[in-house]
Image 1 (cartoon, helix red, strand yellow):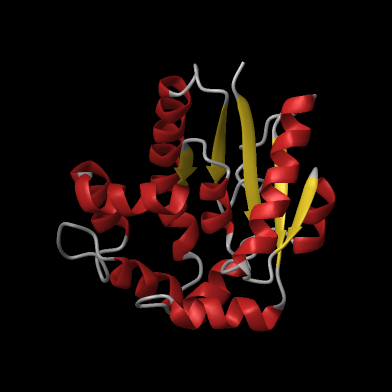
Image 2 (cartoon, rainbow, N blue to C red):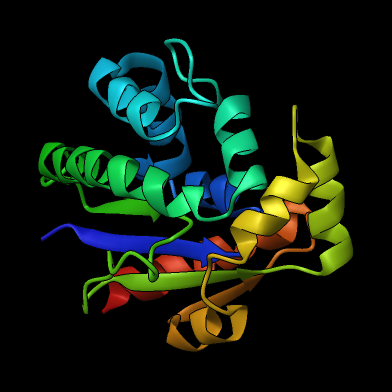
Amino acid sequence: MTIRIAVVGEIGSGKTYIAKLFGFPVFNADNEVKEIYKKNRIIYRKLKYILPKYIFSFPVSKINIGNAIQNNKNNIKKINKIIHPAVRKRMRNFLKNNKKTKAVVLDIPLYFENNLNNKNDIVIFISSKKKHINNALKKRKKSNIKLLKKLATLQKSLAIKKKKSDYVIENNFKSGNVKKKVNIIKKEIFRK
């Protein structure tokens, strides 16, 4: 049976970088959403229908989605209702396509919030100091800090996520330390 490793934590804590370090196929929900915006005309039509003031053309612009969320936080629920089923479908396909691999890594920001957790999943919480996170977010291309803060309010408290996790990796953004910790966790996981 394929082991599912879920990587959770605050926006900008380094989840995506750490997910890749495990060396297994990664399901990155943010990248899947980008793909859906870029290629799925059905989703585009649904978004255009519910958000006609913001969605005008295909492919769907993340800037327009961001504006819709910033101008009315209720729009996030409308967007999620359309996007999440499409992401779940892609996740099911990913899991099916990787069922013969030793493990997969799930990099899903709303992993707990959307009840994507299985009882056998190994959950790793990425913890990082606020100053490291802020620096990481500033380095992101086209990063909208206000929007990211609004999106962070959708997430369960970090304390709850940490408590529900099997492991915690302190990310000080020095890759040597993080790689060591990932290797220790991998050894423990596959010893079980």
